[in-house]
Length: 99
Image (cartoon, rainbow, N blue to C red; front, side):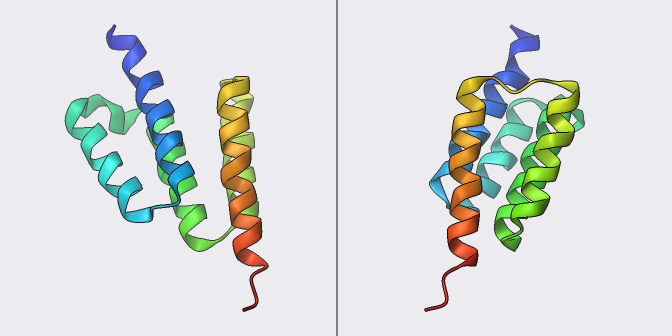
């Protein structure tokens, strides 16, 4: 069970990113660190922090780069890829909004 926690927290973090709520993402990451103090040293945590920063900055290129780096060592499954593509697309849409 202990080894599965980082996977569950990664999936929960991806769901949080899909909401588009930056405060919610930050709060969730804090909660995940409280649930499992070792999560902060995991690659999954670093990925979520980097992706949240890319979304907050509206930096689609950084988002894609961090995903590529993570995918080189740990392949992303279809579920994660689908949801992360949705997040990436919201970054692109946000960057093109000139209203």
